[in-house]
Length: 345
Length: 270
Image 1 (cartoon, chains in turn red, purple):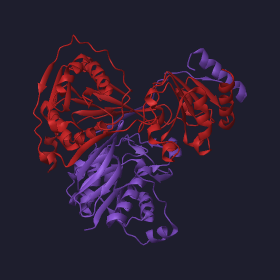
Image 2: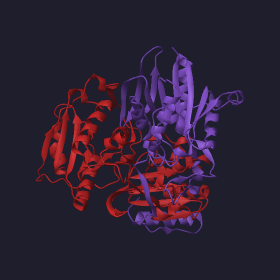
Image 3: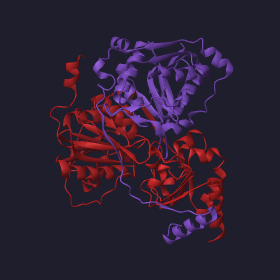
Image 4: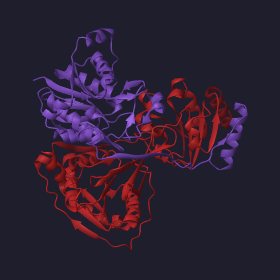
């Protein structure tokens, strides 16, 4: 393909202002992040214009979730029903979503950074030849270089640094957002919307990777439900802090967790990993111990009601995002804290 | 027929060096110059899985990275673990790439190196952490993909692999036709460390260098590489507004602990 043909192939021309949200289903219902994205899409459309649509891909009967999507802000719901799409089928979902985007030409496509969304979004973006920004913590319309563009905010790599990403030329602009990062709106069942059934148009060739079954496992951890989380950084775990951390967690009735380096070193399981490539949690109280506060980590608990940071370095960026801080020798502070909690109820 | 496996690996800043990463103000791309690096941990799991598959059904393991000349180091590490040959995609034309342009160059590099049955990747890198490259690489190759894979079964002579991919609250069992791109998560295996023998052997193994010209020969136009081929741009860097104002609690540890607990109880957080 020569350069000219390649440029013509992209969707830069004639894209609309519309915003499309992929509505991932779990047990026939839209996942939480879908409702969060619809609220954001509704806000963005109020600023920049354009309609908000959702697309649902699933087995027969999945159209029943359309009313919920409409109540959360979708003006139009594209429904693709096919009995072969009960489970996530990577090839088929990619083809269907690609085709709907190519035909309806939205200016913005938003998807949840769930385990499935994080597989589907990059494939669709690559097939469209457009840009995709992962794990956005904020999306807003701004005047950049003399025109209105979607500014996608992602955590930087130190302190409270944030990076603003744009996709100046290619359309649609695509972004993923982790569950729990944006706020969910209240459903309004008086809203009206249109449901548009679309044929799946898939064949045997769209099942090169064929999902055979879904196996449920009781989720170890359940960090999402924890009211209190005690989380340790690499340094603290490495210094043998795991037993101290567990003691503290018991004393406050919380669960233990940790940062990516702590997980890579094998101190905590992946299910207890907090941050950009792990869990986003919003407990009532988050206690971070011995982590300097890289944004990849802090983005995972920025929405906690109350954050306590304990670190040896009083200048660590973790203190910029905490409500309470103690700086000092962790090997002394943590046992002292556990003792106070255990003895002075 | 032995399986031809290729593993994509990446050199990343050592976690404790993240503070030293800077941003090039002209291009808005990340500069990692002068920073201590390691092989992305998940990529070591991908190399390990390739070695295990080779040990089980026979095959050849090629490791590939895109990066500056010093990225050779992570290839040497993988060769010391037991990979058979290395390939360094290195050209100034590749610099400043986002995930789309990275995937395009990786795919061109892979095509230039011959035919493969399986490409393995770590699911995401420690630094960028987008997790987008494996799926975009599969698209660029025109192959199927499975990401977040925690188990791979390849039967000798089979044209498919049976894998388990993680989802929230469980996993999916997927039967994927080869050739395919499979991205692995940490729990797939425990990776081996290089032995002295492995390190000595690694010195004898070949690392091929591939530049822009070879990628063009493989069908990729220069404007699809590096910064030029990247649809996304960094528009700026800023400090987030402090949503919270920290109250530092001083005093000796026991006093500080007591004061903290008192404040938390006041606020009904405990």
